[in-house]
Image (cartoon, rainbow, N blue to C red; front, side):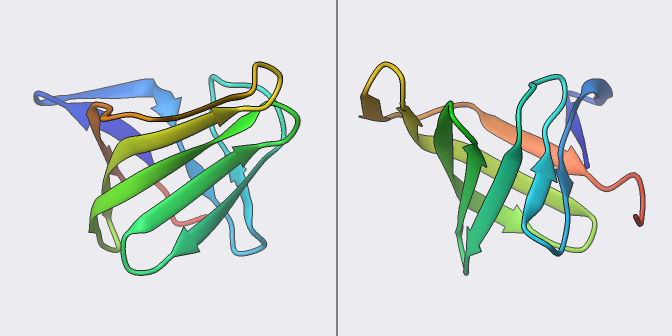
Length: 95
């Protein structure tokens, strides 16, 4: 999925989710996994770094709209509630 906002697509910010629980989140680096807690919570883990909890505002076959609600950074012992920006993604591939 590729991020879109205000009528343009940001191809540098993509998300890839796979059935085996792995995820790709370029341009970030690391080993990512995810857990979808239906109907409205998505947790993305970056092994060794931290995790982000998102409220799912919309999820369909071709779009995802999410908002960051909590982040944990392991090395800095940060665990905080946040009200992040709303991010919108559209599907660009069927892989």
